[in-house]
Length: 166
Image (cartoon, rainbow, N blue to C red):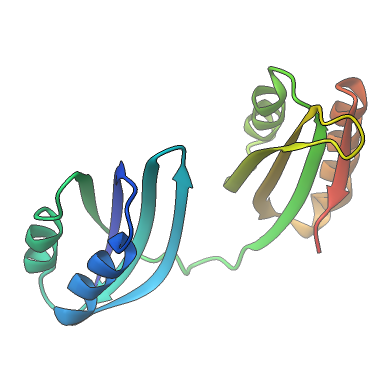
């Protein structure tokens, strides 16, 4: 069984998700995980699928989709260690350096970030831009409270709110 990860980006238009997944399924691939997003006029996807045998036909057919750039990589599932994930949402006034400060904390502690999602929303009363960041990371049960306390300290210094995700 081969595991393949595909990333693609290009101008958004209706039907892209169907074109990609149809090529995979029509050629005996099975989608396992995916993330897709539209930012401005661009569409981006990261998707992994499994297939018995070669993925070359799928890769060749994906390259024929116009105005979409693809990258394919064979990968292996890491199932040797069970990892627990934890998420926090960080909210506050949109200011430079928030992502840098938070990601630096995780780097300094050698904690693996598995996903980050950021977006801007308008404040309810003033309409000012509010930065939102959902950070998901590999959690070690013994250090969970320390991570929360450290993030609270960083957020306090930057005038941000920390919300523990459930």
